[in-house]
Amino acid sequence: METFDLAVIGGGFTGAAAAIQAARDGLSVILCEATNALGGAASLNLVNPFMPYCTERDGKRLVLSAGLFTEITENIIALSDEIEGKTKYAHLPMSTFNEEYVKIVLNRMCLSAGVKLLFHARLTDVEAEGGKINAVTLATRSGNLRLAARYFIDATGDAELTYKAGFSTRLGRDEDHLCQPMTLCFRVANVDKEKFAAARRTVQEKYKELRAAGKIKNIREDVLWFPTTVDSIIHFNTTRIVKRDPTNAFDVTAAECEAREQVLEFIKFLREYAPGCENAVLISTALSIGARESRMIDGEYLLTKEDLLAFRKFDDGIAACNYDIDIHNPEGSGTSHYYFPKGEYYTIPYRCLVPKGSVNLLVAGRCISCTHEAQASCRCIPTVTTLGQAAGAAAAVAAKSGTTVSDADVKTIRANLTAAGAFF
Ligand SMILES: Cc1cc2nc3c(=O)[nH]c(=O)nc-3n(C[C@H](O)[C@H](O)[C@H](O)COP(=O)(O)OP(=O)(O)OC[C@H]3O[C@@H](n4cnc5c(N)ncnc54)[C@H](O)[C@@H]3O)c2cc1C
Image (cartoon, rainbow, N blue to C red; front, side):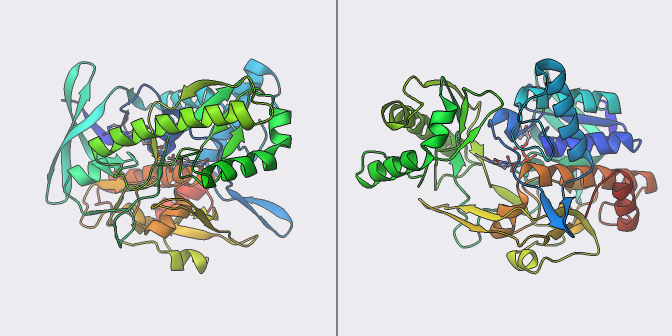
């Protein structure tokens, strides 16, 4: 059995950032990912674009998700320039991106930092005692693999490692445990984008009219779409599945089937009613339906909506965020927003990454310790990347001084993160 200083489970932006930072800080790191690529929701769920991660102070742009996220986006732009020449969408702050470049950039950054990658490796079992994880088992292409490490980071999005290790987790919102809807994203080619964009309002009105008449069954209230880096291809985020548990295998299967019918219904709508989409062709649905929210850990601090609304800055803050409190209705139609005023942001305390009673496990990504409302803001890709980077830096500090994760020196973690370009 191989032993590492750190095992990171889950290779989304969170897990990749955690692994890169910890390896750069001198740890031997393995990053285990269930699929065949890094990028998490961006690769697996076709999530696009990066949601906003900047604000403005004193007339100047302030990048809140700095550090590794900036480095990743710069590398995506450099790769896209190398292959396609200067592309229209590749500028900072970056929003629309090509997920194929993401996969390559994250591979390269991990490998050059010395991270050992293990793909097609799904965590199945955890050996833990007294708050300490000793080993994990992953189902891999070569059978079951048992792996030991001094420290672990759970970057599975679903807090899978934390849950399996027996730590306390919560699901969705407190009152009924419903989570934000699941969505199967999809891409449509052969679209005259200019024509489609110009008819934006007419398309929304027609969609709403057909929904009201019961001719469209999808419960999503409107058409949510984004451009891609290819002019004739449009990204749609328009399916909506509610009241299904993203951690329940049968619920997820039912959600996949239901969402696929919504996709078909939507393609028919586009071809019939949307200008520019007369010859539209469905070219891909995501490999997996995406879950905006599922389990969240019970950590040393619970980040709340009140913290966000007070723009609270914590002494142990390790990440900054101002993305809106963006709640897609867990019960049906409608999406609510609270937008932060210009120049304002909140920070996320290190304690949100530490499960109560944990000796050697940290958690980062959309499953940190926060309420349903707070998670609705801090769940987006730029922010989770900064949380991953912070977890990697913290694991390195704990490993070097031989402490538990809750005793890791926060001042050193923050100083190391600042030196690595992070902002909080
Ligand atoms: C439909 C949808 C639309 C969204 N839209 C946007 C958007 O436009 N912009 C934006 O910035 N954010 C958006 N988000 C939010 C954002 O994509 C996610 O919150 C964020 O990517 C979560 O990052 P993560 O690293 O925590 O988890 P993920 O990105 O989900 O990564 C987790 C990784 O862990 C792996 N994994 C899981 N379980 C195991 C296991 N047992 N063993 C091994 N590996 C495992 C998964 O394969 C995955 O690669 C959206 C989310 C969804 C679902």
